[in-house]
Image (cartoon, rainbow, N blue to C red):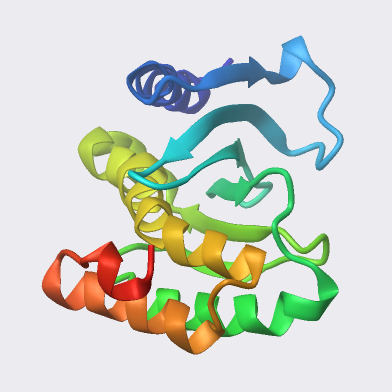
Length: 180
């Protein structure tokens, strides 16, 4: 493994422990998604109301970028509610600020966060950890309640967006005001 791979592995190993993630390295398990994936991590994301499993893949692209995708598993999106999740992800993207990533719905109906980071961030591990772990997990945690309410059909997309907007604007929401 080259110096780049060693630096990346150290960041992944450290954060996998901090976030209680199960880590599979490429040599441990043949990945089905892509030959470029070097790591797959899984954990449970929780807030005061909901828990859901998330998976993360991290690897280096052919162009030398660090590629990370974080997605919910199992899939929470159905064809009938796909448009609502797309609309929600567009609003969630407006709240990202200085993150290098974006939310989107992939062809498998996964709600995903994806980023491509320059290899130079390996020289600034604090910022690399923010971009790969801190910010994506924080954004997912903020979105977990509206995502689960969209999944069950309890909320319309407008209600889910209202909740996310209030949370981001105020820093808190009263769940009782949303019927939960």
